Amino acid sequence: MQAQFGGRRRWWVLAGLVPVTLALNFDATVLTLALPTLADSLRASTSDLQWFSTGYLLAFAAVMIPGGMLGDRFGRKRVLAAALIVFAVGSGACAAATTTASFLAARLLLGLAAGFATPLTLSVLPTVFGEEDRNKAVAAVTAATMLAYPLGPILGGWILSTFWWGWVFLLNLPIVALALLCVTFFLPESRAPDRHGVDWPGVASASGGLTIVSYGLIEAGAHGWTRPRPLAEIALGAAVLTVFVLWERRVSEPLLDLGLFRSPRFTWGTTLATVISFALIGIFFSEPLYFQEILGTDAMGSGVRLLPMIAGLLVGAGAGAKLAEFLGARVCVSLGFAILAGGLAVGAGTSLGDGTGFAATWLSAVGLGTGLAMPTTIDAALGALAPADAGVGSGTVQALRMVGSSFGAAILGSVVNAGYRGRIDAAGLPPDVESVARNSVAAGTDLARQLHAPDLVALVRAAYVHGLDLSLLASAAAAVIGTVLALAFLPGRRPRAAIEGGRAETAPESSPW
Image (cartoon, rainbow, N blue to C red; front, side, top):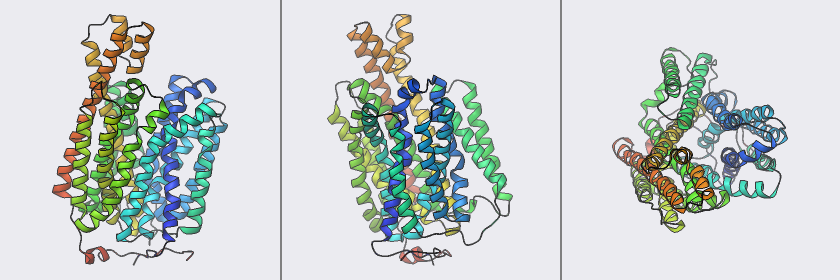
């Protein structure tokens, strides 16, 4: 049987995983704030700035499943520690970069390190925490992921306005050092009981397919769904992933055991976690713009105004662990999705006259619903994994969540833009003014201020709020679908006998206690 560790010491493992989760996600959010500074310091073009963000995401997507496989075969502790060291090196390289090429290379290194580390932060949890505590551990890691979204603008904005821009990346170093200490001294080594050969065609097709799909979605979100190139890229990526699935069904030692999807807990836990990622991503790219362009805050202020969602998440995660234990995953996740849908629906009623208090109310409900649903769905998927599949399985969960976020960003971003531009087009503005205003709410409000046209400011802001409401309504619809799916397909509470049996499990190789 797999050994879970009693006492307080096992929580030190979590103390190492939480800061590294913060560092990985903080790095992704803070770059957006640093882009204007990087444009000046590195003389970066618009294309360079786009690749600073895109390159990180593509490298991240490419290695999540192979990263989990390496952890399964060579030891999750060992691979996670190596990924953290590479992440620290990449952070230092970002700060030391003096050219766009060197900075992009450092960003790619960061993306690779983050892609290897992310699935392993989840795959090690079943080796340390039993069924009764794993949900709490997953909730803590999930909360750290969500906390990074407002923390990035808050800390990043303060650093960029006070210190040299390189400190934004050097801030990762003490966090990673703490995580390395905890991983080294408290995390037991674990790996698959049998080491098979590496499925190189599977690695290539999984990495290639995820990379191409992610790139197509990024392009669609940036340039719209009417252009044939992004659609062709998405279709090509889907075709490569289809080849991956067909290959995995034939090969004797596959990268991903497709038999995992015969488990309702894994299949629907993964599916529902992906739905949540889709529904939430719209908040993180549209709400900061609302705070800054409509309510007049800065980037740091927009991060502060997202904190009510984090507070709701923490409450929901704490209650969800107990609710899932007593009533089962189906009830907990369905309730979470219902609250999430309700919060998003209320947010979709935002008007130009609403302020921070209204936003805090519905964001708190969104956080509460997410806290109830997200950790439990991920825990359901992790609970179905045998030790041999923990790394690849958690990598699959994370990869599909990322694809869900990418689809959400592209689709919901298009909804915001369509709603915004529809109101601008219908206003009958002069062609030159309309052309500028259609670009973005920021461009529209800047032009209106230059022209000293308060009516145009009101029009542009009202148009953006309309687009925001449509996006939140679409997110609410996704959450309603998640509610129905959870009620229909997610297994309920498992008997204790089923929890304890059913899988051959192995103990970690070593432990300091």
